[in-house]
Length: 429
Image (cartoon, rainbow, N blue to C red; front, side, top):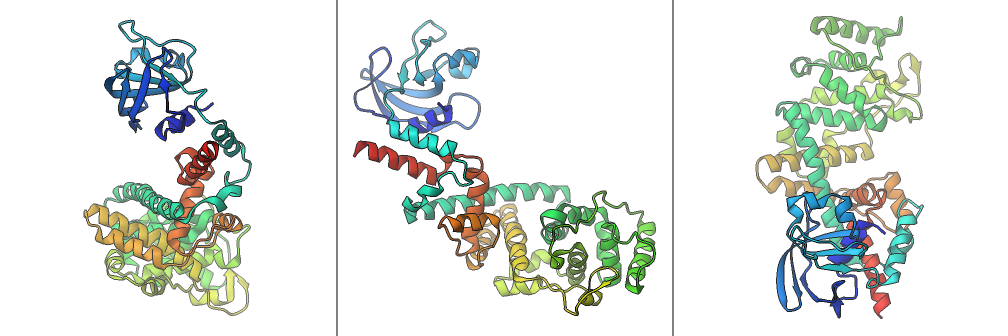
C-alpha cells in the first residue's frame, strides 16, 4: 500500500461511503474532504465531517497504519494536535491526543474496491515508458483537452521560473539572456552547455563591440570552443586563429573546460557549422526583446532564425576537409525549436515581469500556430495513438511524459485519474 494512494482515495471518495463508521463505531458523514496540504503539517486542511450528529471542521492526517503517526513523531508537532479524523488503511494502534482521548479513526482496507487497487498495481508495475499505454484509447477527448491546458500552464510556470533565475544572474540583460538561450538550443543536447558557457565566457560589451565583424565573432566562438588550437591549417583557419589570439590576449579570455563534441552527430549539426550560424545571428544584432514583442507571425521568427554559416562552410563541415558545395542553413526543425524554447519562453517571462497577459497570450498563440516538434518522446506517444497536431500539443505531451509518466505519478495525472475512476465505476455497475 502507498500513502499517496490513500490520499488519492480519500480526496476523490473512492471508497464505500454509505454507512461509514469510525473504528469505535461512530457514524461518519463526509461533507468536505479538505484540500491537499503541499507544505508541512496534516495531509488535508479545512475538511468538514459529521460524527454522531456533531459537525467538525479541521484537519485530517492520512497513514498506511495508525502506528505511523507515532513512528513519524507527529505527536511532538503542534500542527498535528487538532486533527478531526485519522484516515488509515489499517488501524493497528489506537491514536490518542495530548489529553488521552481517542482520535476518531477511519479504516479504509475493507471499503475500497479491489479492482481499483489491482488497476493501480498494474500501473505501478508497468515496464513500458507510458504505464497506461494499453488503456489510452479509453480516455475521452475532453479529458485530454483539459489536461493538456493544465500541462501547458504548468510547463509555462516551471520554465518561466527557471528562466527568471537566469535573468537575475545576467542582471536583467535580456539580449544576453536571449543569446545564451539561442546558443543552448543551437548546441543541442550534446553541445548546448558548452555553447552557453562560451556566451558567458566573453564579456557582453566585447560581443557588442565586434558584432559588426563576422571574422571576429566567428573567431571568438570557434576559439572559445577549443576549435582553433591545431598547428597549421588552411587560410580561413589561420585567419580565425589570428583574430582569436589577438582578442583572447586583449581581453584575457579563459576558455570553457568542456570540449566540443562531434561523435554520433549528423554533419549538419556539427558545432563548427552551428557556431558559424550563431555568429551570423549575433551579427544581425537586432534589439531582440523588441523584435520578439513586435513580431506576431511564425514567418517573421523563421526569417530571424534562418541562419547561414559563412562562405567557407559551403564546402566544409570540418576545418581543412572539403565537401560538396552547399550553403549550410538552419532547417525548419531548428527554427521551430528556437521559437518554442526561446521566443515563447522569453515572451511569457517578460509578460510576468510586466504583470501583463498580452505577451503570455502571444506566446500561447505561437504555440498553437506552430507545427508539432518531432522527437523521441513524441514518437513514443504516436506509437500509442496519441498524435500531436501543434506545438501546443507536443509541449503538453513532453511535459506529461517527463513529469508524470517517467516518474509514475499516475495519481497526480488526469489520465491516470480517469483510468482509476473507470475501474471504480466498473466495480459499482
